[in-house]
Image (tube, rainbow, N blue to C red; front, side):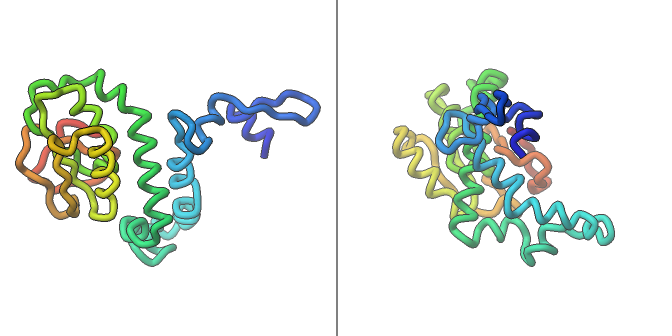
Length: 201
């Protein structure tokens, strides 16, 4: 296992049966800057790994393998046990933090008066956008169990008066009182057809 990890740069083989950590390995450490540990756990851990193992069920039936393995859809699964929800929320936050700088440098948000982050999780991206654009108001829209984390972030960063937190189901509808809409980490997720996103991160 150690040699396999070394072959893809996660570890470095130092000889005499010893292995050393690498910068790539640091991304899998808890609380490390830019950590993707929670994301790796979600994508490769107890949930997705057995679902991918049942891929042939999807090939043969057209049904979703995750639903077949766990008996419920993935969103319901993550909404139920608190530990599953926390790992997923941490994964989405870590993934967003990893692309925040690229998103902020690649798009000019200055003309937008109010922006809505659909599926914004704990609000790291919209908070960064609002801090760079003091004229802007924001709305973070996500599921009820998730948005409390966003409220805590906005309070800590002094954005409570500038960013409204709305809970709901983006498979049903999204807020319409906006001049800019984007979706965080939802590529491949279908929003209601009447809405158009200015970007997906």
